Length: 114
Image (cartoon, rainbow, N blue to C red):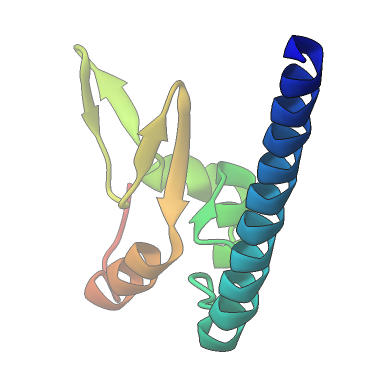
């Protein structure tokens, strides 16, 4: 009698676990199908062009020689970085934001760099 009662309890427990799993599965499927209707894809980088340029890319972007790039490139003097051109430093590398470069070009039109 005791073993029969244990078997019935185990079978009931198994049925309850399967029923609960089935209910959770259905709820997840319904929420997934509901969410796909409301999803909106946002492309943060709407342009295909990079937002930051390396020094080589900057040189190509501006169409200037190595010597000309050296005149505007950021320089370190006495631990202080001076620059004629907007930049971002990541680690030991300088990068140049395209939008800031375009504004800088408009602002410095006609200026001479030595």
